[in-house]
Every structure is written in structure tokens, then in C-alpha cells.
Image (tube, rainbow, N blue to C red):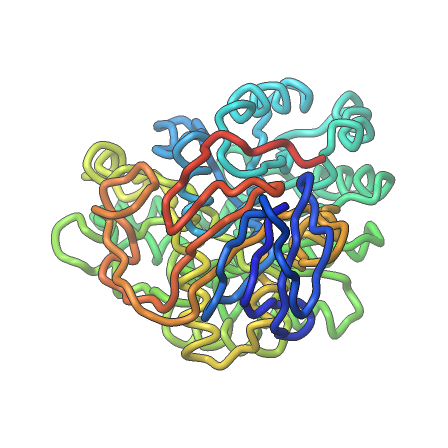
Length: 449
């Protein structure tokens, strides 16, 4: 048996208690548990004991028309584990005209035996026909109940496809998330900027204005209302988008939202960095202004945002971001985040903003577990739950440096930021896989149906 002793457990309340683990499960939670001969004790003095964190938005080993993400399942899940994330939900991407099952099989082959944390998949929907409608009904048997559509880019789908897919997803009680930007508007703005000779990273946020997000959030909400079923906004980035979310809810539309650390910490001034440095921050939606950041922080305090995920989509600066050296629209869009999400959000939201630690755990663990059908197996410290446990040192500071990270990159967008606390120990399905900040047992992650 493994006993985590002397820590502060974070559940619905903070409490001093010990946790006993056996056969991959939490078997006892009590004020004090005396170890028996042969038991392993993990001392959590001056530390929080958290449920394993869940990152519900990652793009490991994703290939697009330009390149393949720098982080594979192997490197990306090691980074996740180093940052206290014990379960990731990655995107399975069908090809147009292909099947959902083929996308699932490809994703499974990439992850199985290569993942150092637990994993599952969202299924992307890039077109729609009778065959795909039947396949949606078959997805729960494979453990997939969540889906995603893009409202922009080459894989963007029409409102009709969103509506038809949503009706099928409703039949299985699943969840549809959407990348909310108006694709037609993005194309027009990009063409106008390039024609005007604006080709540097500084043009990127101009090509993705907040109204493009706001319009798409509104449109998604009303498609959901027409279908009579909830919808979900991924990576909400703007005050304007938040306003449309609030309008929809005021009209009794059931719509949830995720945001990301980058929209709570960084801003669009980074695109103005000298040379090509601004390319490090090219992502979609882009970074916004201070008003947007403050609006999202207020929404978190008001519990209007349900989850904080990373949208981890990593590209090396030296060999991949430079694809767009002379054309900002060709810069691979995405940044890393899975390794640093927990200390960044603990520092910003709890230490600086005063958010209750219990709310942080809901945003990073409990709520995604509920939304994606893993609760109470995951996302909570409870007797009978899986023993995914993070021991997090409460105090002490360290500075984020690219040279010290696990993820497979030559930079981090959070270079030089000082964070409070540190992931000290991680149990994954009851197995100690990270001890004193070092991964000791990689490739032990399993698929979570």
C-alpha cells in the first residue's frame, strides 16, 4: 500500500488528511493513516494533494499541410506528467472523405505504448454524410463521446454540418466543441493585409480580430438552440466573445466554455517583438489586449468559464515557425503549454488573484472529468476513484526556462516568468511515476474510455 501523508487535500474543501492507495485505487482517506510494515510513505508536508489534472485540449503528433507538431505522444505526455497532468484529451483528426474509425485507429497507434500519462480522444468532424452519422453512434463503444468542429480554415465546416452533427451527437449524449472564428472573415482580412505589404507576425492579430470570434460564438450558440442541445466553445480568447457567451446564456441557451493560460497571462504586444520573435506567439485565436485578459479573469472568478486547457500545439521556432518568415499566414499556428499550465495557473489565479484553491481544481480537473464522462473515476480525490494524485509543493519559486523544460521545443512562450510551487510527486493509476520532480516510470499511461 502507498500512503500519502501530512498533506493538505483539495476536494470540495481544503483538509488535512492522509490518502491510502492500493491496486490503482484510493482505498482510504482519513485524518491520519498509520503505515504498516512494507507500506510506502510519500511525505506531503507543506504540500497540496490534488487529484491528477486533466488537460482537455492537446494536439500531440498532429500533421497539417505545413508540418507536424514538435511534440509526439512520447514527448508531449512526458511534459504533461512533469507538470502534474495525468490525463490528456488529444484530437483524432479524420481526413476529408475518410472515416472516424480510421482516425481513431491512427490515434490509438500513435498513443498506445508511447504515452506517459493517461489519454483519450476528441473526434474531429471535418465533413458530414450518412456514413459519418452512423459512425457517431458507434463512437461511444470506442470510448469517444466528445467531438469538435472548426468554423474556420480548410477543415472548417458549414452551419448545416454543425447542425446535422449536433443532432447525431445529441442521440448519444455526447458533447460538441467548436473552434469559433468566422473563416470567411479571416480569409478576407489575411488577403487584405498581405496585399498591403503587411507580412510580419504583427499582422497576425489583425487578421484574427475579436469580432470574428464573437460572431462565431453567437452563431454556434444559436445553432445549439435550433438543435435543442448544449454546445461548447474551446479556447475563448476575447471580451467580445465572452459578451456573446453571456448573451446566449441570458437567452437560456446551454453553452459552456474553455479558456487557456495564454489568454490569461500574455497579450498582443508580443507580436511586435523585434525581428521574427513575434512568431513564437502565433496561435489561433491570437493573443488579445489587457481588457480581454481582465474580462476573462473576471469570468473565471464568477465561474462563467468551466475549464482551463492549454491547446498545446507546439512547433519549433528555429525550423518550423520560420516556414512563415516572409508570410505571417504561413507561420504554423500554436504554442506549447501542457508542462507549465498547473504552476502558471496556481501562481496567477490562486496566489495573485485570490481564487479559492478548490475552484482551481475544478477548472483543471473536476469539471473536465465531468464534461468528458470520467467523473468520479478521474478528477477527484475520493475513496474508490483512480489513484491519480499530484503532490504540489505550496511555496518556493522558480523561473520557467526553455533550457529546463521537458517538451520538445527550443523556446517557451513563458520564458522568464516566475511561478510559485512545484510538482513534487505524481501517482498515475496508483503507480509512482514522478518522484521529487523527476519522471521515474514513463510510458505507463492507459486509454480512458
